[in-house]
Length: 124
Image (cartoon, rainbow, N blue to C red; front, side, top):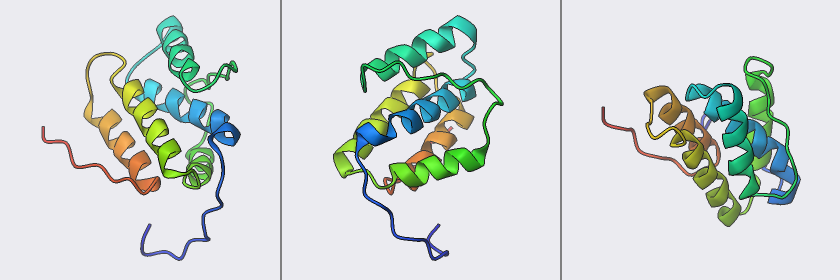
């Protein structure tokens, strides 16, 4: 990321990024192995802490990383407090099943790095 010249980040508000956050949370839950009703209930429960709107749950494999990359670019424009809320929500999604798999944690680290809030490597 630091080796490439990137366009300046456009400032935004969390209210404008709710669908991007919903997509990110769905991807983290999928990475953790959540499926079916548990996935939908957990997704809805987590997003209720962010908004009263009912946001769509993206089906596994129905999206591309290019979409996630574009959404992460949008989320990078959030104020620091909102980035913190997004990361806390993402970490809660990773911990939703009571355990942290390496794949989930590494994905969370990528999200944190793209938000300019790096996380340490997890010792296994």
